[in-house]
Image 1 (cartoon, helix red, strand yellow):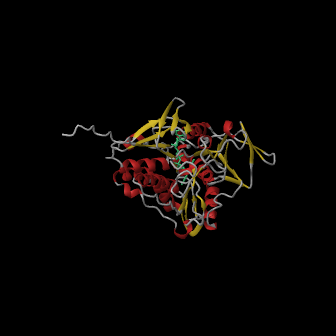
Image 2: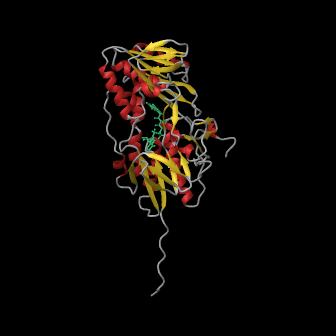
Image 3: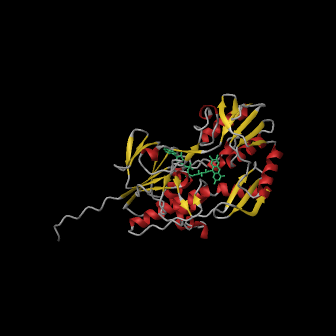
Length: 401
Ligand SMILES: Cc1cc2nc3c(=O)[nH]c(=O)nc-3n(C[C@H](O)[C@H](O)[C@H](O)COP(=O)(O)OP(=O)(O)OC[C@H]3O[C@@H](n4cnc5c(N)ncnc54)[C@H](O)[C@@H]3O)c2cc1C
């Protein structure tokens, strides 16, 4: 019998995922499902809320429609992943720790940064104080309460991007007695095929949404908006949907970020300055052959899955594969019964093909409902989440980092 002491097993590798939105949850489930029986990896997921925020449904929530509660800890049941409810207040990339609630630290060996972004209410004075936003269920609930109290009046939607369009349509359909005004620099649906754009505009007209494009809001006041030419428009509620702002946490921690504050990644989705940090979803600046990806759910979920697979490859001593993604559609709801679904080339430019009407509305609803069941399937069959269009020639980077 040997009297030599048995060596201690190596300390487990600690993977810490920050943010359980569309991208962070995809990373967490993919990793949790593939490491169920492994003792050598400890997985922790941190998020501000226990409930998953279906951001795609927030324009509906804003008109008082209830959504099903989706429990993140419940989804992780049966895996070894730990859920921590808390607010990330700082990252220390030297010590490799993350401060939670300004109160305690969580250590990591590999970090996945998936904190997303919020609507930019700081660039336009007054927006932060006087406008409603749609970042969280709570924000949407505040707007819903305000709209329900209005017998008449004007609701101004600031921002004519697709979130602004969906929000305007949803409010106008639900509250036909309110005057809904959509303000923005660009024509609504500017990125769509001309036919789809015309359809969208006709649908907004039918719903009674007034559109003023080519306008710039200079200030949001308690009961009005002021345009850049000085015009005042009285408003009983202002909803701000324009622009995205990133959390300052990444830049403050010394991670290389782009002009929008997004973490710049290499082709495996690792931070170019801190390779032990992966960045996914809206919070990451991910370059493809056609340019830097913009924030969507369709692109965010694959980034989470890819980061998980890259981490596992790196831990087994293999080189992570480059991430490639091509867009395929832009579904836009126009109230509950109507929508436009624009099919796109991988670089997100519009194809000639688009759907409209009830069929498009059903398509949009299917897309909106899809993420949660996808996570459930991934938990049982991780490979089921690992398919997405790679974009062919559109996604070949000419200058890979
Ligand atoms: C109203 C609205 C409608 C949209 N509609 C569409 C659409 O129809 N189609 C589409 O493709 N995209 C749509 N988007 C964009 C889409 O929601 C985002 O691209 C997507 O949510 C990005 O996923 P993510 O995981 O990167 O970030 P998120 O989904 O935003 O998740 C980030 C998570 O991190 C948490 N978090 C943030 N900061 C902290 C912190 N400091 N501490 C702890 N937790 C934190 C948040 O609570 C959240 O759970 C919409 C966005 C909005 C706001």
